[in-house]
Image (cartoon, rainbow, N blue to C red):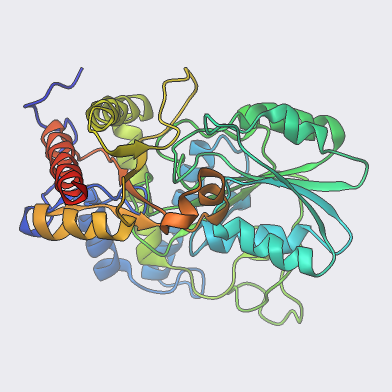
Length: 405
């Protein structure tokens, strides 16, 4: 077990200025050194457009594209690398998946834990006539799968849900939902933005039909790269069209995967960084990374619980799976002010606000406080970072108590 006073077992460079970075729920930072190195080396050496010509550099660029499809297909437990589709991020993938499979008149089930990447497409569809059922989460932060299953009906087209909450860190029982969807012929679209690279995400184990992921969080890749894996037998309607570098004389966009869902020149530097990031995760192992992060999370949670005037949200031990984010507020303070003090006075980076998940904060009542402050732990955090964060919040809470006297 990691003890206070030891370094992280996952070594990377320290952010500039000695910043204690605890905003890994937004994006992992720093990245493993090999991610930066491989992106730079590959782009300098093979930074041409893949699949458009037959010269050697073009072939090498295409080889990276193909090898990264295979790497991610194996990572997510898929079987056909051609159905691993690259996009900008999980928001991009969710938009393609939702608008490409759900139509006016369909019935869809989702939850109050969703990110705006899911909420906003569904709100648009709801305004156009799609029937959307919204299932709330329990007070412990978990959605009861039976409540989702109870909403399923003859006309249900899809269940779209979040695997892990970016606000309260709870990991949902997606497998139970996936089994019920399979039994009823309902499409299951799963947002794994927060869980991919932190806990196992396997297509068959979770029963998902479409997994949407982003590269810049726990997969340790750069920003601007992500995508989805589409199960065999599932087709997504075209909502875009453009160049693929393949069969250019064809008037309509290609139907075959991956080109069916890919448009224009791919983000080759991002794919190179994602390749290096996933290889780093595979080399160290999901289990080791998650254990390290959760040991620090427990240190953080226990330290924060002991501070008078600090409220934590859905952070009790339930025996269920979770990821290493913790949201809190200092009584009587706006979350943004807490974050500013942590940054300016203590050199600690966190996230404040509604975290693009308004329905979570409406349930918690924190929408009236303009959200909450959130710490997100990553593999390069140390017990020293956690101790500093607890001490800083303790001092801020003490100052707030003195102002009230």
